[in-house]
Length: 87
Image 1 (cartoon, rainbow, N blue to C red):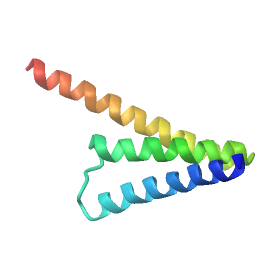
Image 2: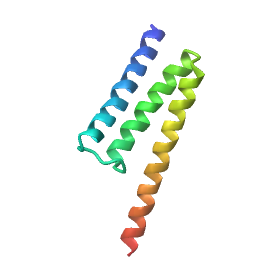
Image 3: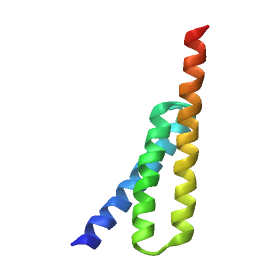
Image 4: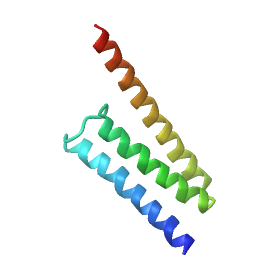
């Protein structure tokens, strides 16, 4: 049962990351949008969970880096909005 849940989490990650890339590619989302980064962060976390459970360390590290890049982009977005509000 637990393996099924982990597998489903992994599939949710695939769907979210792929959806984010699709929406970016068809110009529905912008790369610096919070929506795109949120899809990447949540999708990446799901994929990290699945990869760690299956001892797939290269995949876990790659997706972990993807998540960190997403958090960095969100932080940069928030900082730039704060600067714009002060101006």
